[in-house]
Length: 232
Image 1 (cartoon, rainbow, N blue to C red):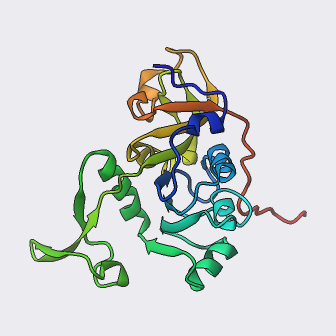
Image 2 (image 1 turned 30 degrees about the vertical axis):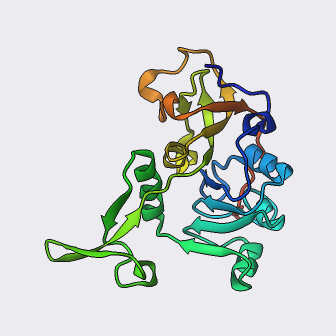
Image 3 (image 1 turned 45 degrees about the vertical axis):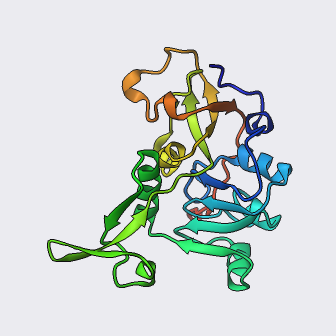
């Protein structure tokens, strides 16, 4: 099955619809599927529910979908670094479902593994636990969290082969593998597509069975917060 497409818009063709749920990889601006995000903006798909650790910054990453008012709800761990996110949330324009980072990663992983829910101690006794089932295990209280199954996953990797096997680069792996697995369809954008057999099997981070479509492109790789030393 041919998985390689010539552009982000071509890879997204026939998959987007208003009100859909999208799981997006990345952490801050590290390892984000920036080309696919741009293409979703250009497509004008609206009322999106997006599961991602955060929502980029005001003018880059998922933040551009906030700017165009295409996102209805975020399922996130962190809302800093994005003034528009904060403004829309505080004004009631944007729904927000807060998740501890580990819980969000496990919700994605569980959804991809066919696990509808799991119990965790994280969040017990806080607003995170409100409205959720509580259960005692060995005298300890846990809350039920639901697995996430998205209509579409968009992720960013370093290398891929034509079968969709992915290799991520260092910390850019972050949320990408669990986000990739929990989508009914997964699109990966990569820096390089190498010939089949070029990837060492033991070095593959995500098997190609999870990846349905691939694009190769040039990436800006913007630094979210640049910290430098003063000159001596």
